[in-house]
Every structure is written in C-alpha cells, then in structure tokens.
Length: 93
Image 1 (cartoon, one colour):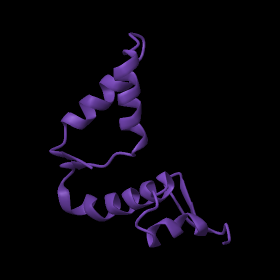
Image 2 (cartoon, rainbow, N blue to C red):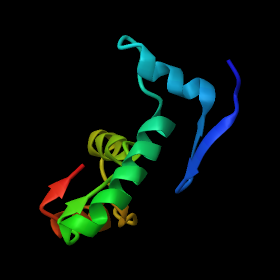
Image 3 (cartoon, rainbow, N blue to C red):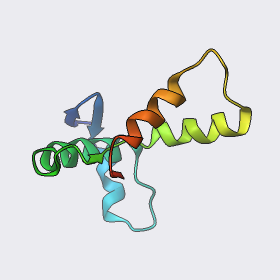
Image 4 (cartoon, helix red, strand yellow):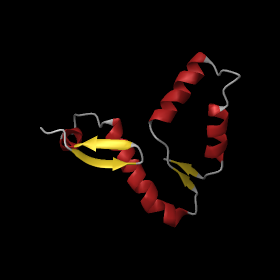
C-alpha cells in the first residue's frame, strides 16, 4: 500500500496506508489518524459550542499518567496550566 500523504492538518500527517486500520475492527487506530479526526471535529464544533468543549490530543493524557506515576517536577508548570485550561470548559474530548 502506498505511503501517499492524504491529510496534513494542525501538525498531524496521515498517510494512505495509515487509514487501513479503519477497515479492520481488530486494528488499533494510529495516533495521527485520531489527531486529524480531532482537528476536524474541533473545527466543526467550535462554531456551535461557545468554547464549552475542549479537544485534546491523546498524547497529553499519556503525559499526565506518566507525571502522576513519576511525580510532578516543581519547576514544570505544564500540568498545572493544562488542568487550569481544562477547568474552563464543561467537557473534554
């Protein structure tokens, strides 16, 4: 299957061969495919939701899990700033 670039949106690049997972229910969906979908949904819903819904990349929750297990560095405000951003919305996706 070709590795032709089909989608490039908001830093996510999706190749033709990466979309094959959508045809097989036993396959895992590639992070780039999920990120591109989130970007499309975010743009579509942004107009409708008055910023009540916050869309997040699947990568950030994995950082939360890692930092929760390892402990938060006192010099890093990333997690605190992200949680504050989350709390300004009614729903996270």
